[in-house]
Amino acid sequence: MRPLFLTLIATVVFSTTALAQNCRELPPGKAKLACIQSNPAGAAKLARCREEGIKMGLSGGSRGGSLPGYVQACMQRGR
Image (cartoon, rainbow, N blue to C red):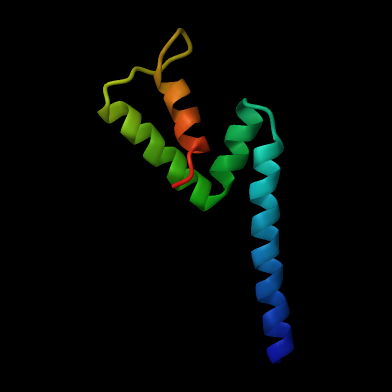
């Protein structure tokens, strides 16, 4: 029973690591955003970065808003 339990834990840990690495390899865009949001840790970091940008007074939008650039830079920082 114990080896089965350890195998299950190892599988979960390595599959989560593989998921995170696959998101990093994707080019910026909707697919990468969906990949990040599917990972709970990535979704939390994305929400935190957006919240920080909004608190700083940055605007969003597809027409020259500075919020998307800030969120991208924030996601790349290691915290």
